[in-house]
Length: 77
Image (cartoon, rainbow, N blue to C red):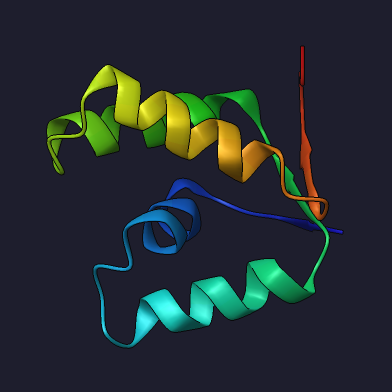
């Protein structure tokens, strides 16, 4: 299981980088990954402050990401 950081999740969710985003998507789609709570919090901050996501969009994106079968959260509840 790989431990991933905010950068990978942001690239996965936003698809904003032509080279890095497909690599992040491929990695997360094929590997079991572990996400620390602090990484989720940082991802929320980046999506809001840098990408202008609304709270609803952030909730939808993170819920979908957390629901992927290969994603394990540090504190899922």
